[in-house]
Image (cartoon, rainbow, N blue to C red; front, top):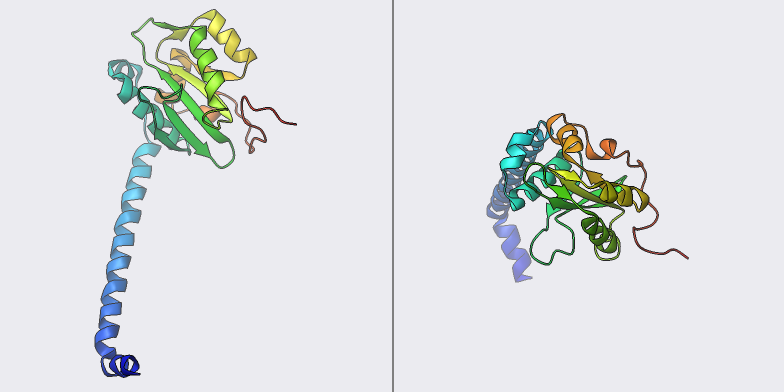
Amino acid sequence: MAAARAVVQHWPVLAALALVAAIGAAAWWARRRAAVRACTDRLASLRLGLAGIDALGDQAFEFALRDLLVRDGWTARQVGRQGDQAADVIGQHPQLGRIVLQAKHTRVGGKVGSQVMYQVKGTAGPVHGADVAVVVTNGSFTRDAREWGDRHQVHWVDRDRLRRWAEHGVALHDLLRLPVQAPRRRLGRRTA
């Protein structure tokens, strides 16, 4: 009863406090939305040249791949570190599912071999729950690596494809011709 009397007696103060809190929350929300919009606008126009990509370090290359996925409409995060189990970037798309990127930043002219493809195939689905597995390099792939990847559903992005993705702005899912529907099964997992 005493609490009800206090509320009735001090309602103007309580109403003013509620108004101040609402204005503060609205201002915070507006600033946050503006920051997200600015980040989205910046990423929407993101273009990276191969010379700049070649100059990056390994971790910066992973963050660049993450930013390119975000530009293409994926939510993505960089996860690469020691013991990452062949996943440097993991992304999610409402219509394309989960993607795992393994980044192989090489010196110009460097080649990625089949061993990397085996590792990615072995962990993308079972460990990371991926629907799509991709190995990305600023170099090239051996013929065996490309053929093995094509046969076993491990996509590969070599220097030429990276140029189309990073410099020309072609979305990765368009570049790889990923189906625009939610996948029904995960890579590497058996269905009954």
